[in-house]
Image (cartoon, rainbow, N blue to C red; front, side, top):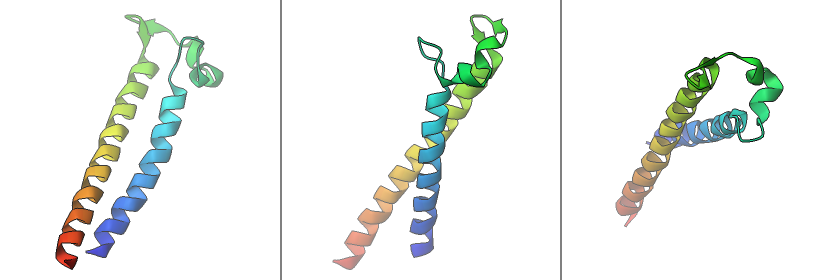
Length: 85
């Protein structure tokens, strides 16, 4: 049962780092870090580049995994606390 908690913790740390990097890559009003890596020169399709749309999808996917890890750890801690008392 502890292996489950350790797996969630490792996954939470990895997704936290990845989510931070993905958010920083998004284009802001000033161009953001994505323009530093060539995102500013891509062609646009319906107002947004294909790379930016894929970046949005990856950010949402990693965010969902991050949220699931938080909920899973919360539930595990609640079950572990009820089992100890």
